[in-house]
Image (cartoon, rainbow over all chains, first blue to last red; front, side, top):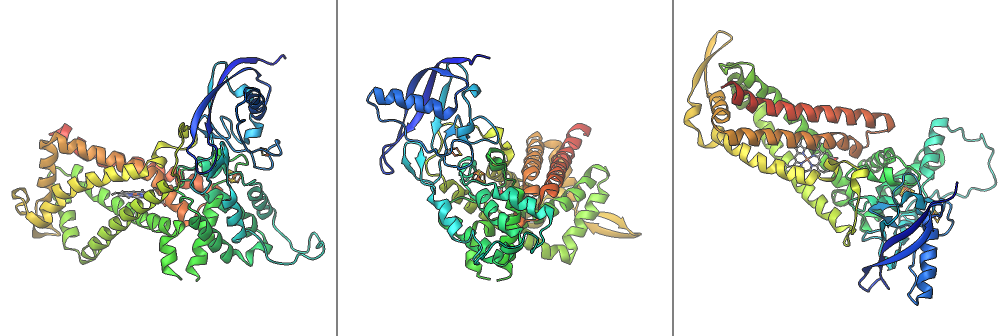
Length: 253
Length: 233
Ligand code: HEM
Ligand code: SF4
Ligand code: FES
């Protein structure tokens, strides 16, 4: 089937030269975009055009372009990663848009994710939360025997589901409170369900939550928006587990 | 436990919201059950007896300040949390499309709570205030036979039923209050269990369903009372 060509689109995009400078929206026209092309390809084509016109190209984050690195961000038409479920922006296709559409593209908005340039935000805050406790401090040594530590199937599955988090920040971008609870919950859960992670469970929950609060993320009000916009469908039942782990840690202090 | 950090931590604050919220839900269940006596006995004896029991029982006397404290903590914390959460996004979005991923109620708990608070002020003024502080001619004592013994008590039934019969405004306000509370609970009830950490994939769905039911029961239950007096009399 031949691809449908979108003859004209209007791209309304946030432009900001540096963290300190004030930003603004600019609207660019773009022509003849195949519905088969990806959203980021469309932006590449637009950037080529801008460069030829002597305009500074739009800066946006991307790396793997196959939905695993979590670099691509973009708040498109009012939704993190655009108008589709369970995907990252790099997996979004132009067939989700129609002829003559105005597409609004904004950076992730959160005090803890300051804009670096245009659509690129600084997500170092996630790194800092991880460094506060998202690890197991043991020397793993050589490769252990696979069955040396028996782990139930359900626990293994839960841990793996949590481990699917790619740290993209869509949860923060989506949440009306800019809360990082889904991310932190995933990072706590992937270890809390496994025997290797249990040893430091209390310290981990306490320190990661403290860091999350310190960095200025908001609190969770259980709207459930994050779960539906998360490209990896991380469940908010992990947030319940984080609450449980945290409260247990606090009450046993 | 380092109290300071727990009180100021995001999860710590939410913990108090949920505990006080669930406590308030329990109060509302008792309150609604007693109030429904209003529509099951047109002589008002059942309701007057219940009100008399509540006004004289020492346990209820102890619970009154606890209830007030519950409200205060819930409301003060909700303000602190809401301000904190708004601060977390200093620059907002130009375009958002939140209706696809969350319910209006879950996003507007503070608005709903604030409206409930306005209602609460009026509600306390028109009933509690008159019964406990200023008194009202409508309350003049009646005698009810309790287990064969005549007991003198205030005619709370007269006060409540007269207000609903005579004032369309008060009746409508009370219907609105019931609906707002019901909506608040459709999110609040299951959210509280999530906050305490008692949820998992299965229980989350169950708590959510129960929350919808309790919300509906509250909304209908509290609306039915003024409607009864508006229609019947
Ligand atoms: C009177 C004024 C009230 C205000 C201002 C208020 C405000 C709030 C706010 C802002 C939240 C947090 C929303 C969220 O976490 O998503 C909340 C949660 C809640 N409220 Fe209220 N509320 C009020 C009254 C009530 C009443 C009367 C009840 C009970 C009958 C109640 C029960 C709850 C419950 C159960 C929660 C859930 C706690 C949680 O999410 O962990 N609230 N309220
Ligand atoms: S929880 Fe989901 S939305 Fe949040 S960072 Fe991880 S993958 Fe992204
Ligand atoms: S670029 Fe790697 S997930 Fe999109």
